[in-house]
Image: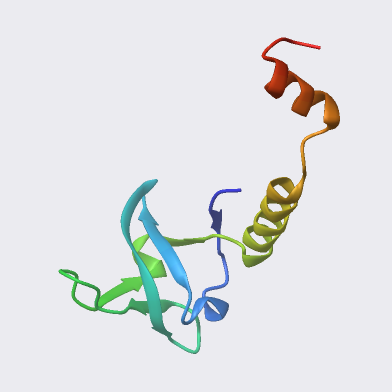
Length: 99
């Protein structure tokens, strides 16, 4: 999965993002608001971090985890955990030897 660069900043309002500059993570947090032209965004204050402003013109990038990837992973994981072992696996566990 991983993070993906978000070229359009408008849709990330209220989302959890990672702010990077020159390839290094600067901060991670929830986007409080984005200017109508998508050139500036603010991350909400969080713990020791005060509200932060980041401008695209200064080289900041927004990276985000796509929600559809998270949902797909959660669905895949629930299917894996719901699968029961085959009878051959049960025999192996009870006898202590490989089939």
